[in-house]
Image (tube, rainbow, N blue to C red; front, side, top):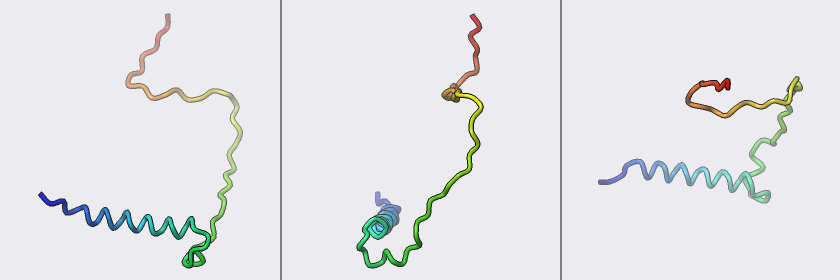
Length: 65
């Protein structure tokens, strides 16, 4: 059986690799065509406690004793 999706996936992978080579290589000719990176600063309010969320559980049982 022939996998028809393979050429498309390979093409996407090659495009991703090409883009990364442009993005991370400072001397790449096409890098000057990319927009400048910018830092996103989030204004996050401080927490009123030092508690953290519990991990996901499949049931919600509470052990009292």
